[in-house]
Length: 172
Ligand code: SF4
Image (cartoon, rainbow, N blue to C red):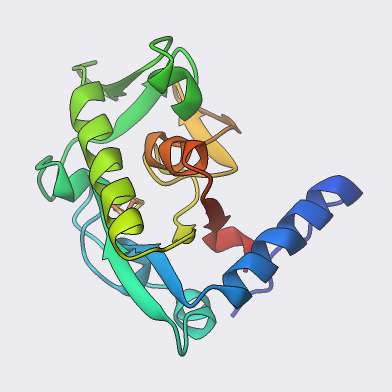
């Protein structure tokens, strides 16, 4: 198992420590289903992470794939954010577009995000552990118009707006 790269910026490092601590203290965690081994990624694969499974030991886990929950299908065309990141999508300044054909999937991504928030609220999960770089689940970096940049996905932005802590699998 490779060790995660620690941030060189001290404020980033302390923010990461705070997220790790929130995860340690949380009895119930909403988790990207692909990290748990569910084959729900756009390419029909999983992203099972032993590090994630170890971090969740003894906790109640709520598996969630916002994109599958929204009926986008498995597999499905990959989607990039365009015009901004997740926060900008909710503000109406950005969209979620299929990478090849530029079809607008924003309503479906927002529907999946709302379903994730509802699940978190129903089970009182104040912390989510989500897959980095996804247009839904990313929390530190996402692809915008094909370029990886700082920012969050559409589900992460909604969970944060509701006061929930989103931990990245790359934080572990
Ligand atoms: S990153 Fe999120 S949306 Fe993508 S497959 Fe995993 S759970 Fe589903």
